[in-house]
Length: 120
Image (cartoon, rainbow, N blue to C red; front, side, top):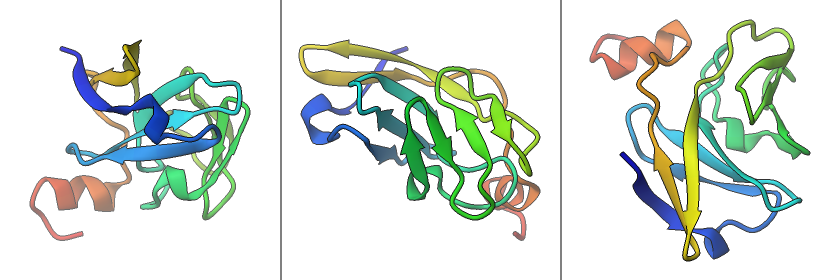
């Protein structure tokens, strides 16, 4: 199911916005105008990926320089080893729609425990 996320004009090129889903999702707009949605949290440690750097179709994790491909979620540089979950995006009439993936997220254990109501 496609959910309205934000207005495309609300995401400047090279920037992102965060969706307060569980777990949070980040919507990135590249310098070329492409739009991708991935889980907000790095798979290596609890850090928000939009706090990192967007370079082409990659986002660099802000704490340890792991890089994730926005198209596939694949890790392009360690120390992260697990891919970040991606979500389907649709642009229509200036609105960004996101269909959340049914796949389980690859969250660091502390984040998974916090979301499950356990101690982080």
